[in-house]
Length: 111
Length: 118
View (cartoon, rainbow over the protein chains, first blue to last red):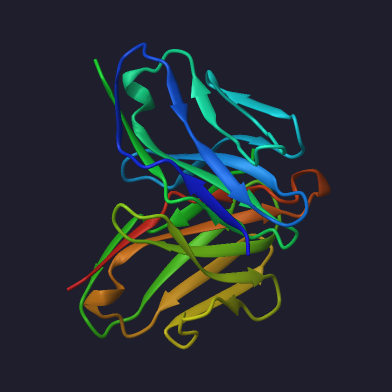
């Protein structure tokens, strides 16, 4: 079945540091890939998405590129802010529209 | 656009009582809604998928008589936790998919409901 693997956390960075959060996937066919963010005590918000190979999703300074050859969708941001502190989930949908989530990773950004 | 409202955001109830959680799509028609459960510091676990006008499809291990789902209209789905017990305490999150072809596989999430059963 489909699966998503995220790097182990938590991750703690200083403000303005470069961020990379790794995500790889296993799926049949051509899934759509997503990054969702969850701020403390809240539901999930769609951060960015990519629906086909080589697509780059971007939003709020975050970027991720759909790499079919490496089955990856790593999340990057050039300069993190304290307000980026949250839990980040990588996810995919297959043909049935069900979301398969990674375990999530907590990012803490120090001033 | 694509706003999903979930209510209540927090509920405390006594053991043995039933609790209803509402999930509404505010600015689009949701052909499919999903209900998830999230334990502290863990990922989301899909409980069930509901399509408007039909019975919900429950994931393996989820008791359908315990977690009643009704998707009576294209903008409203409800989850009722019947005879709640302390082990049902959790964060419940709904999501919805727009019927529009362009956004067919994007799920928009509600803010979640924290249920505490005493």
